[in-house]
Amino acid sequence: MTLISRRGFLAASAATAASLVLPARVRATPDSFALSATTRVIEVNGRAATVLGLTNAQGGLGLTLEPGQRFRTDLTNTLDFDTIVHWHGQIPPNAQDGVPNTNPMLTPGETRAYDFVPRPGTFWMHSHIPEQEIGLLAAPLIVHSAEELAADRQEVVMFLHDFAFRTPQDVLVEVTGGSATDHTTMGHSAMPMAGGMGTMSGMQGMGNMSATMPGAGGMAMDLNDFDFDAYLVNDRTLDDPDVVAVERSGRVRLRVINGASMTAFWIDLGAVGGRLVAVDGEPVAPLAGTRFSVAPAQRLDIEIDLPADGAALPVLALREGARERSGLILAPRGAAVPRLSGLSDAVHPPVAGDMSQELALRAVSPLPDRPVQNGQMVMLGGSMQPYLWTINGQVWKNRVPVRAKSGERVELMFHNMSMMAHPMHLHGHVFQVVEVNGTRFSGAMRDTVHVPAMGSVTIAFDAGEVAPWMLHCHHMGHLASGMMTELAISA
Image (cartoon, rainbow, N blue to C red; front, side, top):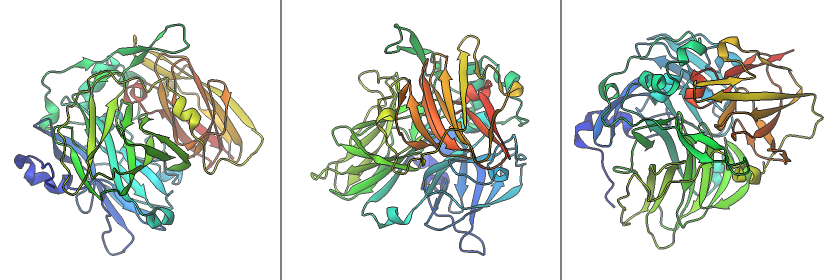
C-alpha cells in the first residue's frame, strides 16, 4: 500500500508532524517527559499554515503513558507570549491544573514541572486561553491501563480540530462581535501569529446556522457560530488524509478526541458497526452503532472489527448541521485507498439536542449510592445578539461561584435557557450523568457533558480538593464571552 504523503514543500517540518502520539521519555530519569508549547507548520488544503502545538521530545504531538507511569512532565514555553496548559480530564492537585484563575501563566522561555498520578484512558491537553486553543495549542494525552495493553487490538488516535486561515483573534472578534475582552479578564497576553495564519481567502465567516428543536414548539436552535476553513483529523483534511496501516480482519480501538474549539461532530463508520466502550476516559457498557456523536472536549473509545474482505475503511467526522466532513482511513496492506470529498451530499443532522446516545450510556463503575447533600440548579443563558453567554446570569468577571464542601455528594442541574447547546466541563472531578430532560437514569461517568438547548442535564459527583475549580462551557466563543465560573470547594 502506498500511503498518501505530505507535500514536498513541507518536508522540513516532517519531524513535527510525523506522529500524533509518541512516548516522550527524556532526560536522566526513565520516567520523565518533556513537552514544548511551540509553533509548527502544517498543510491545509494545499496551503502552508503556521499553527501552535504541544510537542514531545521526538517532535510528535502529545504524550502516551504506560501503566503505572506518573505524569512527570516538564513543560517549556518556547513561544513569545504567555500560555497555560490544562490536562483535560485528569485530576492533578489544583496547583497543577493549568488554569489562569489559580495557576501563574507560563512566561516565554519558562519551564514548569508537573508530577501527579494520572487517570487511565483517553484524554487531551490544551491551552486554557481561548484564542490559543483556536490556534491548535492542543494535543492527545493517552494513559494506558494494563487491561488495554493485554487486549488484542490496534490503537488509533483520531484528533479533531477546526481551523481558520485567519488569526484566532480575528475569529474570536468576528464570532463575539468584540465582546470577549469585555467579559473575560484572564490576564493573558496577546497572541501574535505568523505564516499561514495571517490571511484567509474565501472567508466564510459567521455560520449562524439553525435547526428546529424536536418537542420545542418549532423553535430554532443555533448551530455553528463560525464557518471554519477546514476541519482536521490528525492535522489533515480529506484531500490528504491520515492513512493508517491496519491488519486485515483485525480489531481497532479508535480513540476519538474532539479538540475542536467550536464544532460538534458525528463519527461515522459507514456500513461497518462499532462498539462505543468508553467516554471521556471512563468505561461504559458497550453501545453498538455505526454513527456516534462527540461534542467539543469529549472523547470516545470505539472498538471496530475490520472487514474480512480487506477493504479500506474510511472513518469520517461529520460537522453537525452542515456538509463539511473530515476523517482518516484504516487501510490493510494492498487495499485501495479511496479519494473522498470534503463535502457530503447532504447536510448532517445536529448533534445538539440529540440526547439519544447520552440516554443510552451506562457507566461500568457508577458512583456508589449516597444521599445527595448539596443540590443546586446552574442556569445557562445567552444569545447570539448580543453575543453574550452566562452562568447563573453572570459573566466570568462578575462570577458568583457554585459552592460545595469537600466530601459532599453534589448534584448540579444544568438548566439551559438558551438556544444553543453547551458542552459543560468541570475541572478536578469525574461526574456521573444522572438525569436528562427530566428522565432519571444511571448514566456515563464524564468530565464534559453536552447540555441541549432549552433542556437540562443533572450531574452527580463527590466534591474533592478544597480549591476553586473551573466550571465552564467548552465552546471557545462562549467561554471567551463569559460562560465560565468556579466550583468553590471549602473544608
